[in-house]
Length: 266
View 1 (cartoon, rainbow, N blue to C red):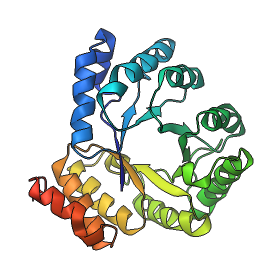
View 2: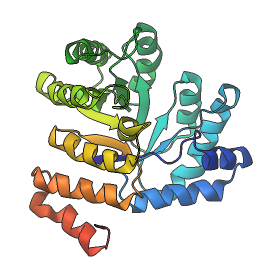
View 3: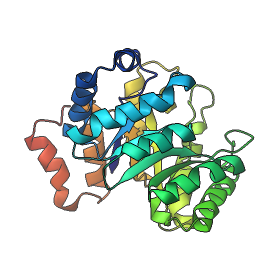
């Protein structure tokens, strides 16, 4: 499982305030905690104010990248902010989050992805928003896959997000997501999947219980990557156990390593 650490997101009050102060030490500490907890990518989102995002994202990348070993995931819908951040980015691998199946987003972002040989997240949504059936979402997935093919971007660089919609708005959304999740690699070998897990529980009580249960189900349905908080020990414990149970952890070494490190809290 590829863990994209979600905590450096300017929609969070503490992150927004630290960004306004340009508190580099705060962000380095936050990134290093997430790396130590098992993240494979550090997501960086500076998108609270459109007028400041270009400079803020570039500053964040420059402030964090030399103090962690793992690569970053640049999380922005602002193409100028992405381009500016990538001019100072110095790691071999980068992920960009995200583009949709809309023609204008494909034409705006995929040349950047191609130029920097980036991994990219594609959202299963178009001009009409998020479809309400597996079949409709898969039509948009087809558009995303064809787009990366046309730009000669390897399918292995594409991570499809089938999109998690809160079950509080529609009890069928969890099942719809899981069925779409399963269909993607079956239909398009090489393409991987990712999701922002915590959306599933929005508006519900005891959100962490729902998130943990949904992560286990998603791993069972083949999820490749998740945008999560790696500092949630119980969530990470579910991840390690689910990977072992699905035969995705050779000799259960990741599970055993986490146990020996005291990270598997019941």
